[in-house]
Length: 296
Image (cartoon, rainbow, N blue to C red; front, side, top):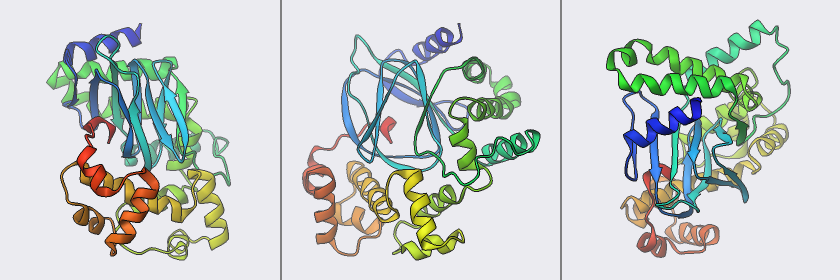
């Protein structure tokens, strides 16, 4: 069975707790052996597949708990809180994270829509923020084929990109495929806005700026953005900035450096908003934070 083989592959490569970057770009294997509360993180477009244990992602207060029965698709950059509340030595969390190549996803989405005569396109709908999908045969098989390349450098070099394309196709055709196609296909204005925001966090962008960027009216943009992310554009930007700042502080930056990096010009405003969101001042967070890399 594909799942058992994938689990054995991860256990063989990670006999102890840790996170490793596989030789194939964008692929990470992880093993967690202690419970970790949910902490601020920023998910890039990613697929997270669990082979043992459970993981948790929280977006705007909504919890998404998943294990080996379903994989998580994050089709766009999102500010979340992530954790492993039940991991232990006896029951470790085992899994793989795959960063989705936007170019491959866009190209495949366009090919799928063209081959289907446009019938798969969900007109007028915004992409879903987070989606859980069952491990179907296509996903399980293509994930195993991808990870098996790690044992042979020549196969990896020659076949790696093709196998990654196969996995992206399996995601697009699976139960989470509608969310993925809306994020990477025609009408992906919200996902494109989020990509833009992610690289301009230190700028003072308004809703009008964001709406203009994708050629929408303010009212339509606001409605579609909230449908896609569950947050208003202003709430989203604030969450992105504070999550990035929390991660920077946990990595060793000073509070003032983190605040400045994400666009805050007033340290007192940053401290107020940080405490309101996380229940701790930035300095308290700095003293207590121990953020494992796999949650980022």
